[in-house]
Length: 113
Length: 114
Image (cartoon, rainbow over all chains, first blue to last red; front, side):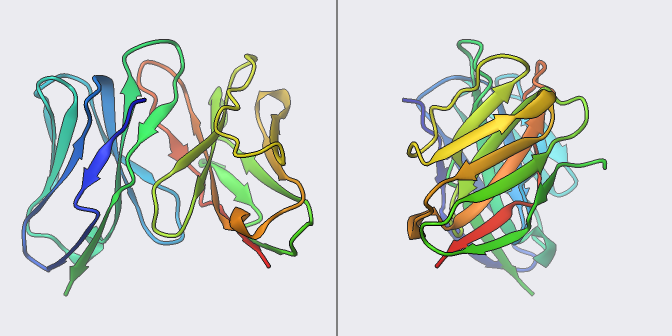
C-alpha cells in the first residue's frame, strides 16, 4: 500500500519566521503535487514536481522533489499570516493507468501576526 | 462557470434520511473525483470517474454510498440511511486526466447528520 507521510502535523509560528514541511514515502511517484486548503474551501493546487531533484519556486515558497522521487519538501521564507492553511501533498503512482492520487494527511500551519 | 461547483454548500439531515450531493465539474474535464474530509484531516478517496470507463468505487465506505455521473459531466453522490459518522465535508474535484493529474476542487458540501 502506498502511503505519504507529512510532518509536522501541526505548526504554529510567528510572522517572519521560516519553516519547512515534509512529505515522505517509501514508494516512487511519477509526480507529486502540493495543495493549500483554507477553511471552508477546497484545496488549491500550488505546484507539481515531476523530475527527481527538481526545485520550483513560487514567490516565498520553494518546493523540492527528492532525487529518488519518494519525498518532497516545502520551504516557506518569511511566513505571512496569509500562508495559514492546511498544506497537502499528493503523489501520482508510476504504475498502471489508474489516475488516483495518494494523499498525505496534511500539515496544518498557523502564522501568527 | 470557470470552476468546480458543488451544491448544497451545507446540508443538515436527520439520521436515517437519504441525501444527494451534486458536483458540476469544469467543462471538458474527463476525470471526476469524490473525497470525504473530516475536520482538519486529509482527504479520503471515495470514487473516481474517468470518461466512459467503469468508475473506481474502491473508496466507498459502505453500500449506503453510491455515485453516478450523467453524460460525462454532472455527478451526484448519494448517501442512503445516513449515520452520524457520515458527517464530514464532501469534496468534488475534476481533472483533465492528461499527463499531469492536477485536480481542481469545488468548495465542498458540509454534511451534518443529527
